[in-house]
Length: 162
Image 1 (cartoon, rainbow, N blue to C red):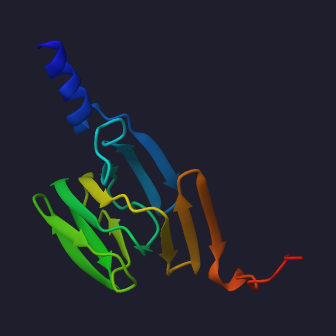
Image 2 (image 1 turned 90 degrees about the horizontal axis):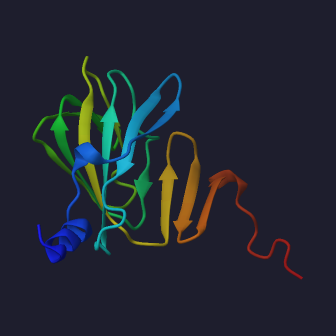
């Protein structure tokens, strides 16, 4: 390849089979290997991750976004999308669309006997607030700042001010 083509490939192309995966686990329910696909690319408004979810495990806590919209592409396997209080079956080839807002809290659960593999694609709006209905907490995220708190621990607007 030419130097220019090599540069373009580096800026624009990623292979999910070459993504460095990190294990995130919290026994007994959660265990996933995931990695960021879009880091270091020219993408500015989209992000992508690759996830491998073992049989019987959940990917992340049940949550919804206030700003980001997500899309998931099921590459291999089957399982359930826990969404809006329902269990919706998903399988290889399915594309799942999750708009922001409290109507669509979501979580993947591998209800099969094999690994579930999928791409998670999202808009990268920041700041972002995620709420977690099972635990009553929320997270605030932006460049260089992350905070999690229980909604019940909200402070008065003037608390601590002179």
